[in-house]
Amino acid sequence: MAASGAAPIELGTKKIGPLLRQYAVPGIIAQTAASLYNMVDSIYIGHIPGVGSSAISGLAVTFPLMNLSAAMGTLVGVGAMTLISVLLGQKNYGAARKVLSNVLTLNVIISILFSAVTLSFLDPILRFFGASDNTLPFAHSYMLIILLGNVFTHLYFGFNGLIRSSGHPRVAMNLTLFTVISNAILDPIFIFVLGMGIQGAALATILCQMLAMIYTLRFFADKSRLLHFTRPLFQLDWRVAKQSLAIGLGPFLMNVAASMVALFINQQLGKYGGDLAIGSYGIVNRLTMLFVMINMGFNQGLQPIAGYNYGARQFHRVKEVFILTAKWEVLVTALCFLMSELIPRQAVSLFTNDPVLVEMAARGLRIMNSGFALVGFGMVTGNFFQCLGMVRKSIFLSLSRQLLFLLPLIYTLPLWLQETGVWVSFPISDTLNVIISVIMIVRLFRKFDRLRDGENPDILGSTIQA
Image (cartoon, rainbow, N blue to C red; front, side):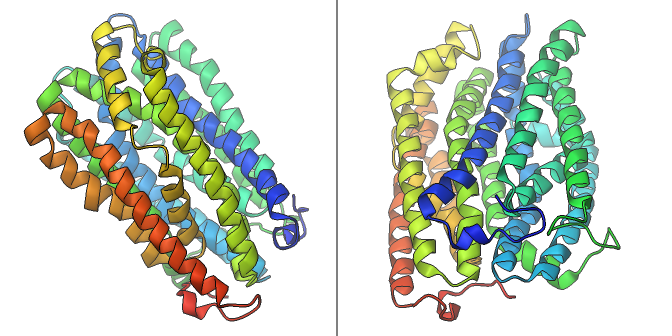
């Protein structure tokens, strides 16, 4: 780990294997904890006496809106993390600090605007996303609290990522663990003891994130750290903001696409299977996201290493860290595939005791993840292009699975296969996305092979400048 007053030089010198473990393990722990964070909410909500099945279906209806909120956060945060990693590699510390101040201002503006607009039309939005008369009260109660605290969520996640990118992955991990543990303690108190139901789960989430956000702001207020706030605190450099937003556009569009896909999934499942079918997707999504979040932890470890070495023009190290990360991520998605095919009922039973919902969710889990074994390669490839600032490639990979493949399949296959068609859409799109990822990464590595370390990387099409 980098000392507080020095650049993380080890990113460019230490062996890739130990370096990836050093940066990825805290990210894996943090992201796994974050996934458990959401799972704990769902498990508690699914067992609220008398309304568990309806409440968990109502929670599933909020997924598209939650993805839109996350999209706004990644638009700012992911681009900033990439810029800071590369700028540190270039030893351009003044520019890195300017990016930090931009993150604060942009996150406050975007999160407040998003909450204001969404709260004004909350019920129509939730109806559009698949809420019925039965599930709307639960979805509304949950999102009302989440949106009121949206600024805390955006600032916490944005700055937690920057803590990791600046060479302090364990601090970022500990913050996430704090939110998970505190949320697990507060959830049953608010939901059951205080009788707040689904609103209690949302309130516990926001309170924990607010406390973590306060720590992140104090972390970057420390002038002894290489990356810290400078005066004026709230400043906006449009040139830096434009570059940061351009890099974050890929993950942003991916989250927007995920929101659109979740919308279509809810609508199609509601049309062909009713509220319980929507609830079954909510359960399947939570289980699958556990493995996705583990891979996001690997991606977090990859991000500063690839970004720093790309900025330092050490192309052999950039290639090496990708290959190692890809191996681990494929292993993770292969494990998800095995769980989905071998023990689906046991897995979904964590969330509900309703036998009909268990059967629907187990069937959906088996079908949806039948092509999931190699998805890890597509995940690391899309993130890799984003880490290097190759915006167009990152955007294309982000959108290909969601919009080019999955969305049309979700709309057309149910015409013949009914509810089953929704689930079948996933393995088909996953397979096509992996094939495209292989083609694109092979082409990039051929360009790497034509470059020597230290040479100008302009032929690679990077948007990042010193």
